[in-house]
Image (cartoon, rainbow, N blue to C red; front, side, top):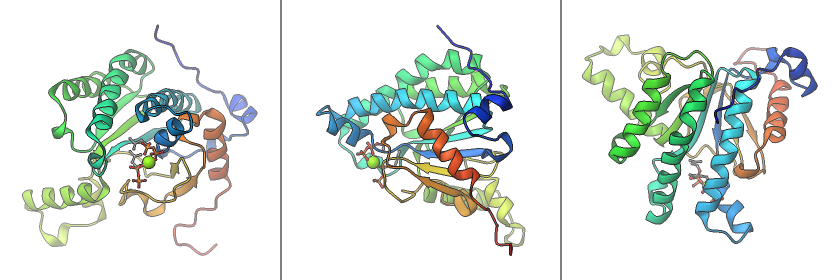
Length: 249
Ligand code: IPE
Ligand code: IPE
Ligand code: MG
């Protein structure tokens, strides 16, 4: 049964110690720690990925309820092909399951789905499912939910450069906007906050160009345990940051 997600009022946000005006517009999440979560429980890594998928449901729902404009989650990097085939297969079948199960509810809640990355490498079944999800939700006006799949920040910049050349854009017309417009994220708001779970403090090739002025929140919580409390803690931390963008205070 598809559920309508609540939309929090200002008072409800306050009860969570959040202030609407101090929320990031666009949040990126490096969903890390599924493997460690499984290992701690003596379970196969795929069980960790399944638990991560459950956590993702909660993250999308909370983002919608809090009125976040855009959420970009890192689901599979261009470097993740280095993992054992068994794990990659398990991850992709979970993705098929996710889109299959969730599309109805996401659409009902006005979520707009977009894929960031090179999807040409995927099976026809997964591509069709993704294309359908994107097509079905493209006119929605709610949360912009972007799934970074076979995504690499460097590859994204290389692609943008190729597009500029293919389009024959003269060198003196190439500026930051010209590059931004040719990234997978074109048209999305600036990434205000990047959250990484599971304690690692690196970008691992995520949103390299877009992260120029992002704030970062690193939490030790493993992604399958990243619930609304953990998410709120990151949003509270973000609200306390002073963003200067190079200016003197
Ligand atoms: C993140 O969890 C999910 C993906 C990279 C797809 P990991 O699988 O990297 O979990 P750890 O880092 O091994 O704990
Ligand atoms: C980053 O996590 C990629 C995703 C979350 C999809 P990794 O677990 O692959 O990153 P590294 O290898 O620890 O840098
Ligand atoms: Mg990892």
